[in-house]
Image (tube, rainbow over all chains, first blue to last red; front, side, top):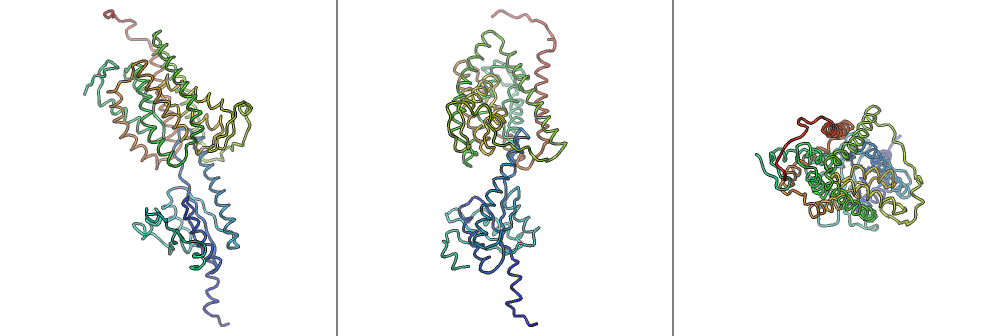
Amino acid sequence: MPQTEEEAAAPARRDRVFLVVVDDSPEREVALKYACLRARKGGGRVALLRVLEPAELVEWAGVGAMMQEERREEAEKLLSGLAAQVNEMTGTLPILIIREGDPRDELLALLEEDPRISILVLASATGGGGPGPLITALTGRYAARLTVPMTIVPGGLDDAELDRVT
Amino acid sequence: MQVYLPIAEMSVDALLLVSIGFAVGWLSGLFGVGGGFLLTPLLILIGIPSPVAVASGANQTLGASVSGLIAQWRRGNVDAKMGTVLLVGGLLGSAAGVQLFGLLRRIGQVDLAVALFYVVVLGTVGTLMVMESVRAILRRRQAVRRRLHEHLWAHGLPFKMRFRKSRLYISVIPPLLVGFAVGVLSAVMGVGGGFMLVPAMIYFLGMPTAVVIGTSLFQVVFVTANVTLLQAVQLGTVDIVLTMLLLLGAVAGAQFGAAMGARLRGEETRALLGLLVLAVAASLLWDLVRPPERPFSIGPAL
């Protein structure tokens, strides 16, 4: 059965996963929207990664455990809220990943471990203070450790512009 | 290298003081604690008079807590409204504590009282810490008992106030009482009181843990500042030479501690801190009960 190139590529495109790092920056929204639009228009899924701050050592073990528990719960709440957004935009639920540690190290470790992820989507900060710590690290000293292509979305793009470029 | 401490009226090895400051600063960086509860008894054990040791402990805690407070404030982890209520209680408590301290000094029982306070408080805290960590080591990472939104008797009290950041609507009386109690301890023992304030805020007031550390530092900074000032003005017991030497070591130590604390995590470290606290309590207790080498001494009448 003859197969066009387009047909052969279709399942592969559906399988691709856009990874968005959920931090507390305002440009996270732009990266998320970009990833959703790409997934909707070209196929694929969205994965959300939230990296928790590791627990500080506090003198009481019970307090420390409770702190960690509350942080995790908060992250879960945040991710499930965003998952609903993603579901609305793409029609599929995203893959949710929660990790604990330094955001940069955990992101690189995840990319190495998880073969499903095909593209990393980051949005750059709009202010004059540089593009943000992750982009700075991944385009600079840690560029060699990157195992997937990375898309940098300008943080200042509005919805219409995002629609045009996806 | 011996230096003379003008207020403590004795000579001490300056290097010893710097290394005590370093060790305590290291621990405070590691655990994010003020360190007063270790510094004051250590100073008493090397022979510094209790009033001077208490005042210096409070001052040291102030120095160690300011940078922590600034960091927490930037991250938005301070509930300033709750902090202010606690602080009002804390200021009243520390003022009362300094009066109590002055009274004890006049009747000549200050050494005994401070040592007793330490033996009781450190003994309890150390035992709890060790028990808690042993339990945690024995059954690593079991599900934490969840705290539901419970209604304690404290919720029925009048003068309710809304604390937005802590997501609480409670009477101001419990936080005032907690602040007062910690203020008294701070004045009498020369500690910041964070190690008691933090559990009290979580279990008694029901605050979310994210704002607890920052808010407790807020209270600690202002209360220890007040204690240092009152001790200096009313009792004249702050020794600037002693304080400078201790802070010199503490600043360096805190940097090392904070760097290590970022990587260390573990019940073992916590158990060690608990054991250290117990050891200090035990040596103070031993000092209280051991028969003196010379039952009395003869000196010139003053």
